[in-house]
Amino acid sequence: MAKHKIGVSVNGTGCEAEVESRLLLVHFIRDMLRLTGTHIGCDTTHCGACTVLLDGEPVKSCTVLAVQADGREVMTVEGLEQNGQLHPLQEGFWEKHGLQCGYCTPGMMMTGYALLKSNAKPSEEEIRKAISGNLCRCTGYVNIVKAVQHAAARLR
Amino acid sequence: MIPASFDYHAPKTLSEAVGLLERYRDEAKVLSGGQSLLPLLKLRLGQVAHVVDIGRVPGLEYIKEEGGFLKIGGRTRESTLERSELIRSKYPILADTTAVIADPLVRNLATVGGNLAHGDPANDHPATMLALGAEVVATGPKGERTIPIEKFFIGLFTTALAPDEILTEIKIPIPPPRSGGAYLKLERKVGDFATAASAAQLTLGKNGEVERVGLALTNAGPKPVKANQAERYLKGKQLDDKAIAEAARLASQDCDPTADRRGSVEYKREMARVLSTRALKKAAQRAGGQ
Image 1 (cartoon, each protein chain N blue to C red):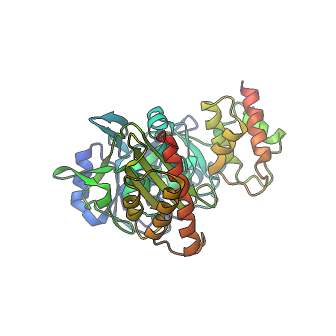
Image 2: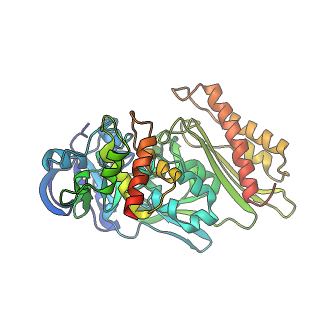
Image 3: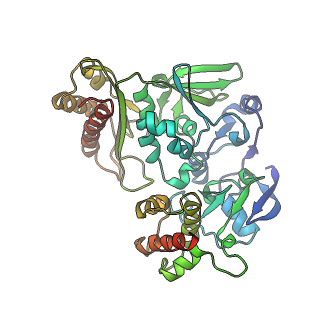
């Protein structure tokens, strides 16, 4: 089947590749770019572990074709840290114990990042609503909400 | 999970997209937001030789009032609908609906046209569009045609769209004054399909009688269910508790749910009744009645 040349900006770096039509964005990110911070959880559009930003908006990268990202911007969890400095969101998850096993964390952070871009001071309810497409089986979400609140305060 | 191989096409214009569908017909599927199609292909519940991605076709994303209609471009994303001030202020039934479709991440890609064209009776927009008396604009090789929503859903995953047609617009008659609507859904968790859900859209007359009513149910049969008996019963009636209770009872008779992990037939029917009661009450409140 036909291959497609794509060019995608990933965490600000231009990446070119030849991909099969059916290649999923998450596999492009993990297997071709070797950016394994983005996780594959349920693989059925439920859990949100694979959440990345596509043109600034959080989407489930297991349910996007790599070719659909051609010419667009992708941001993964690896894009959060800058010059060895943790992003306030990462710091928040550390400080507030926002994770146990860590599987959902990259997705949670990307959703949290997008939320704080559009809403600098979200209420608890707004945070819970925003992360309602990201499942966590460890924390009960309480500390994840606190982590996002920590980041919101730090970013203000 | 990886879909079976297919060829991917990214047409840049609508006519190019229609041309591809005309060429490949049953071999092709339209990719709009991909949030239903891609899971289907990944699970291998469906297979297709050609995916025609309309994501790069301009002019399919808009929400506007024009010529007596609310017009929604077929590829308008749920998140756009959710954020629209026009929708929030004038079409609360649509705001109710879009807010309970899947989850916020899915809504960043999922489209209104896709939600209808997929033909899944478990999707949420079909009932709402039935209640609103919407029309669907299909664009094919011979141009546009308009399909009333009641004629759009043929059966499970089957719509009136021809293989070479794309759902390009949804047209909703702008409701007159004293109108209101509501969509209420019972779901086990965020992102689940409805155990039961009810869409009600009302227009009240000067004396509070029901001038127009649309009532429809989600996931209550092999296709989206319009509660015809309940609608007939309500027309011209004063909307008191008794009338609402009887209409909701009739609606629960109008539907034909199947038992699954979400509940038994009896439970779903009962939930359809309860949600129809609440949806009608909320619609009446929003219409400015009691």
